[in-house]
Length: 214
Image (spheres, rainbow, N blue to C red):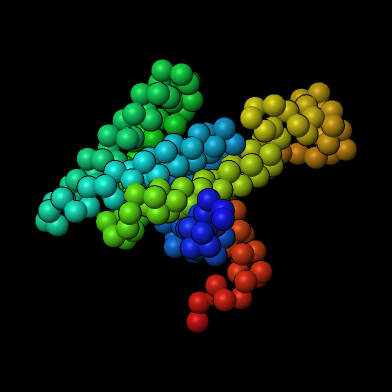
């Protein structure tokens, strides 16, 4: 018998595709626009949200029977704020330059609709293990879109990945630049993130017609 049942597996796999928080539920769009000009901050933000949502879901699940309903939102905010502070302090300690690059967007994880939505819709009504899997799945689905968007924006906008030149040198005209290729400057602008997300949504709905709303 495997570690995960079929239902448990769906908690992780569904948000990666047919119930993705960004492309299906249209949540967490702001950070997808703001920090995906490069791949590295996209990955760091994805990992940060995985930590905050998975651990936060477990904490809320463990406390679900003792949280008064009238103050549950306040308790949820305290939990997520504490976890975000931990992430922020770790980044400042071990990746200060990246912490400065992400700036206020790490703090804005607190207001990410995906996190509060999973606390309210799932963690308050399920056990710690299922809540943990739900947190991993939804955060991974969110992070997957960030990484895809960050990959294409940095590659096509700057010709680099993780800061390394992968298409050649645009100044010395080596690699693809030698045959006339030029970076698309629009890709590093925030509106292009929305267009890339739109293309992902189009591809997703083209593959699965059931996702097309009437």
